[in-house]
Image 1 (tube, one colour):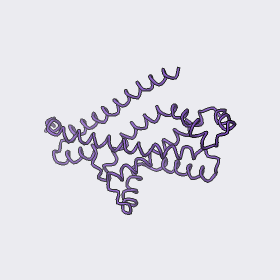
Image 2 (cartoon, one colour; image 1 turned 135 degrees about the horizontal axis):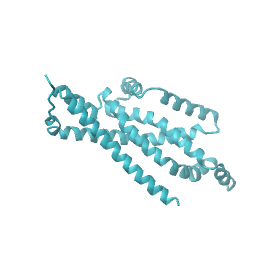
Image 3 (cartoon, helix red, strand yellow; image 1 turned 30 degrees about the vertical axis):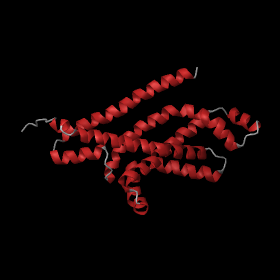
Image 4 (cartoon, helix red, strand yellow; image 1 turned 90 degrees about the vertical axis):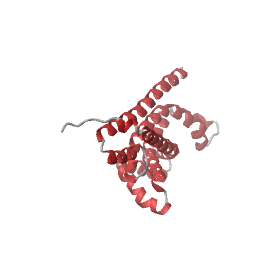
Length: 220
């Protein structure tokens, strides 16, 4: 028998989908909030003159970038979650923050290395310590260069957050999965979910483009 679409499953459950969207954005935003300081810390560590700090930072970045996010989510949920009592919500945020932090670390490292070396030399010659020069001179300049890729990382984070449903975090994907299991309207539900994810990421992409245009104009 030919399949007959029934889109009433969407209109009758819009509150469920929009609540799932909100939770997805909340998880993504909080993860990014924690991922940024992690990324800055290890990004600076990657170019540290201290070999131990540089080694630790490099190991963190390479391990996190080399292990699938799904594995990290499950490991943190099953291992750290048992000791810290994180729960699915905070376990998801910790996992995403640690995972995204490694990518942000590379963004930060690239931003710092794009600042001319003469800036550090000038700061040091004026009497600043390495820490002061990095905090007051180098990082502010690097920050301007890293904002666009940081914003793009947030879009990637939203898409990656769909995996948190595997540890029972109640996001858009899990709500859709539960609703589909009850209604058996898989085509309608997952089509709509795909459109919602596209709407979130595309809207953010437009905002980022406008921000980049404004940012470039302000530089001249």
